[in-house]
Length: 441
Image (cartoon, rainbow, N blue to C red; front, side):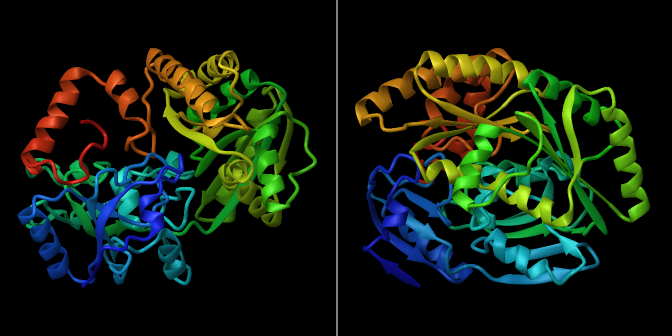
């Protein structure tokens, strides 16, 4: 096992703020024995330890602050087995989403979760319960993991979940570790739930003049027999960042804000029926345009949608938020938060997953000096999360809490719920050595 005190800069640099941290060493285990040995060494030395993946996270969840030991799973990245009888793909935690997608490309199956960064490791997406654009139909990461191997702080190996489709046998420990951001154990191996690839897909782009015109359409679609695989919203301002970044043009289509919808199905007939149903329903909508996309147009528009965040990062530092509210509160929340940002003299870009209430907000620095940027951020973030809480929302839909959202999480969460979480942490990690200081103190 390679262990070095020279820690690569990508592991000690905060991806969002650019802050420099400090880690005393990093290990790159390749076997379960090496993982257990390193955890035991850390326990004997009473050293905090942080598990790191591809460092694509947006909340500082793997950022080392106090000379922690790092455990990298960069070399623990084998695709172990495809079981077509149970539709399960067994992988090590260091495998990336891109590698999983490439492996499955020649098969009849796909892994449904589709977070923005395809270079994220599968272990990292489990640790944050990542979502993505297909969550509206296929669920987030939690709904797509059958089993996991987890190593506890003292080096013990624990298998959670199973290949069984039903389980009422005691506590559901698998779901406890998913979303725990490395604070309860080290996820090393996963059994992923696969699905047959849909035979046909089509995307539809619908343009609206006002956000208020868009919202009723979302409710109508979700309340119908239609089952969109993706249901995204964005406006022209957001897509312009992606256009400049990718050097690709959006469609010449009427509208200031848009719904991008993907439908899929087992055959052309079922897809045609879905399209006809949507087209008929759209006659009553206050839309400016309705366009069924060709395959080339669909690929281009989805590339642009996926590049909004990268396009913003290319021109300015940003503070990326991923709040979630009940779907019937999306429009009211965005309208209110636009006012909050304007009052704080910060520009913001809004887009996200209309089908599950997940709103992405990018707060733009745009040349502000560090002190002024931090001052305005402090004010606006407290206001944003207060407004979200008023509407029954939560501070994170799919990025986790990490460091950046910790103070707002503490303000939003029920004290009893927080106490129970802290008791679980104390039970599984009594010395508070696994990723200490993340999510809560």
